[in-house]
Image 1 (cartoon, chains in turn purple, green):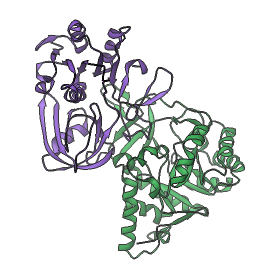
Image 2 (cartoon, rainbow over the protein chains, first blue to last red; image 1 turned 90 degrees about the horizontal axis):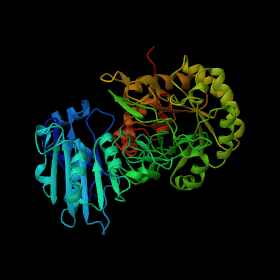
Image 3 (cartoon, each protein chain N blue to C red; image 1 turned 60 degrees about the vertical axis):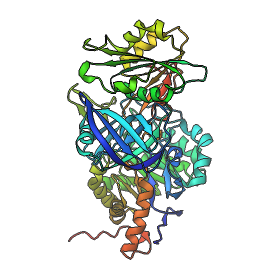
Image 4 (cartoon, each protein chain N blue to C red; image 1 turned 180 degrees about the horizontal axis):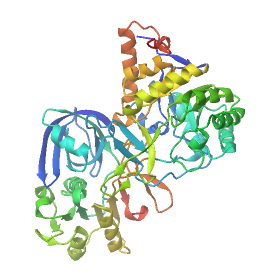
Length: 250
Length: 303
């Protein structure tokens, strides 16, 4: 991990309240699927932790939701050519064993973006079954990236596109097709809890990527912790953000 | 190339820049980004006798120019630090062990465990985020003096720094109380108690409700307090509160500090401390200052 001064290449709205930011690092950087970066926004003391969606050499793409003042400023002020302070690559990321040939990815909301990095990384060697949930048709984005999966089911809460329901329901409904060896998931906590419950006792490893307000992003400040089922604390930024679902309290 | 060395309680630091307790762990993570042996010293994460789990999340919030934190002293306990981290950290730079307790005897016991093993012990009597102890010892001057006296009994070989809370009636009175209690040095300011509100939910953002406010926005208050405290005592002062760059650090030195700690800025920029060290050198060279130690307490107030 390193502190980079990156150059913004593109920063555009791709769906309702969702922006895609592509920047160039000073040099190539290897990034594992599911890792994240901390992006500095001028005059804000804290960097914003944002999942990496695509990493191609020195070009990195992240997608973010307009959530507060910081992300709104990121969207409105950082145009192509501007400099950006970025710390990356952070966290552990998703990892599939050699023996795990069939991967189900289950994502909801902005949780789909780190899963896109997993689809991109594994689509060539593995069979990927993707279940991606959105609020409605207007919220859908990056469909072309998700189509790298062997099978893609898009779900909308209001049924305006694809499967009517959430990503976990879509996954359960299509389970006989997917029959995954491993599951990668990212999304709101209730979604992750439902997935954990739906897969309990199946013996399929489920890896969930967690989110929390962060301080340093590198494991030093102990701000973004979660509880392990063994009673200990884990640092989401450093020990995660990806955890085996059975290993953490959701 | 200016001489950046400073001497604190007879211990030489290669420069006056120290990452502040709680923002830097025990240094290992930042050492993955830069070699932390460039630092004057490291103030460790606050240590307690037993391991602590800390507060629920969210533990951090942000305001304009400030952050609020309520980590609540999560730490592996002093024994964990001694066996896993101290030797490594000592091989890098000077070590300031920051310690906290719930009772007077906790403070004495933890100081006894660290005495002679670290370069300094920094007494955290000003943590606003824990239910017992912490700030309770840091508010009234008589309590500051008492906890300092008790801790000092256990610090036979190691200089004792007392870290003062800004949430007090008179910083000068509390600085004097620490000196009278036997402190070898004082550091200030710890965080200001604050509250950030999520107006949609009508709830505090932090799980702990209140948190400690730090960052650039508190700097003028911190500089004023360092100035007042340093005028009230004869022991050295370590200044902190919103240092973001070399120029900010110099404000603290001129106001009376011998060294400075850098906290929140480590989050804004992981390279903050090495950049500040470089900046101090550049500033001294540009201003004909041969040794940075010449700057301490040189502020000339308007008459």
